[in-house]
Image (cartoon, rainbow, N blue to C red; front, side, top):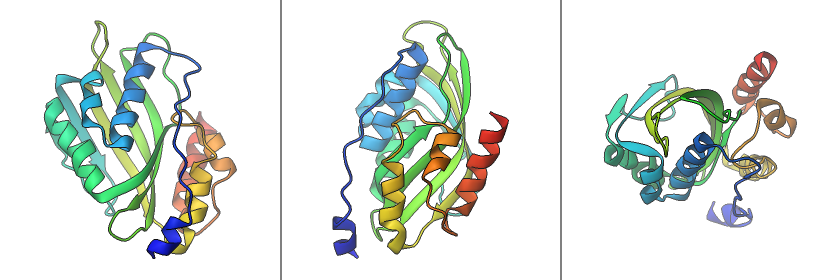
Length: 200
C-alpha cells in the first residue's frame, strides 16, 4: 500500500495571485494554514473571538458543530485535521469581489488518510463574514459539508493527477469538472459540481 503511494509524485502547490483583495488574502491564508499544517498562519485569518459553525451532511467525516475562538479553531481545522489527513488540496470555486463583508462560495477538497492512504474528495459551501476594519479578519465561518467520498486505493493516482490540474486555490465548478475521473466513487462530487456550474 505504501509502495503505491510513493509512486505518486505530489508536487508543491503554488497560490495563484492574479488579484489581491483583502478578502482573498484572508481566504488564501486559511488554505495555507489548513492544507500546510501551519496553525500560526490563522493569526492573519481569524479574529481572536471568531466563531466556526460546521453543518455536516456526511457520515464520512466529523467536526464539532460549533467552535469559538481562534485557538480552538486552529485545533479543529489545522492540528486535529492534520493528524488524520495529508496531501491536502483545497479549492475555492468562486472568487470574492474587491470589497466584501460577506462571501459565500462552493468549495472542493481532496486529501488522503494518513492511516490507510485512501483518497477522499469532498465538497460543500463556505459562508465567510469579515470584520469591517483592516486587515478584515474573518469573524465567522460557516462550513457546509455536502459530500465526502472515500475512494478505493487503486484510484489514488487518478484522484491526485486530477487535483494537480486545477489552479490552487482558485478554481471553478466548470474547470473542476473538466478532468474529474468518471468513477463511481466520485460520481456524487461530479453531480455537485455540475449542479453548481449550472447555477453559477
